Amino acid sequence: MTPVYFSYIAGAGGKSLINCLYSSEMVYFNEPLPQKILDSVPPHDHINPWWTYEIHNPPICKCDGPDPSSESFGRTRDWGLFEYLNTVDKYVPFVAHYGFNIECYTQTIGNGPIIKIIPDLEFINLAIGLKWDLLSNGQPASLCLNEYKKWEDSLASYSADLVIDQFNPLSDSFFTHLAQVTDLLNISINNDITKLYIEKYRNYHLV
Image 1: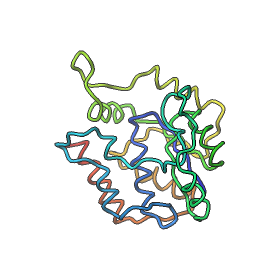
Image 2: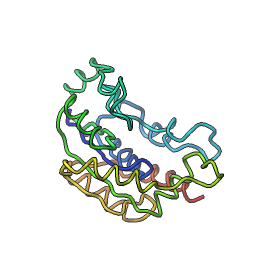
Image 3: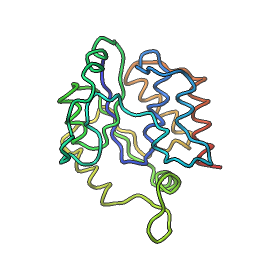
């Protein structure tokens, strides 16, 4: 296993990149293709929160989440899975939003490429407004600049192997950014699955 750490502020759409990578034979994904990837985009009339449809990190350890002071942070969850993945010669993507998430994962699992995703402001505000609960005043949520600064500051001691700027899955630049990731990892992906997925992803945000 070679972990790949994706760092981005919540709502930036980073999982759209990861979900495309799952179509590669060189990326670990123990779920049926393409259905599981397509199902990660909910229907427009969904009742459950967006995150309940998402594909999450392999549950090796409790290194995700925004609160490193939590008692459970860093605890091992499934060591048997970790031992199994160490026998698999594939990339394993992990969302590691903040620097402390990366630190926790690298200490538990090991080092790997770090990909930093800087969001397009228009897209992230659209995405947060669609996926998150309304504010107490009834207005849609949007990017919190203090939270963005916290994210940037947490990565100060980390050197990313790839920085993707102005990331917007609704733009044609998405495919350029996806190619940058596949070039970095030296892998190929299934273009048919990728097109099906990104079409459904875009329809959710644009319709």
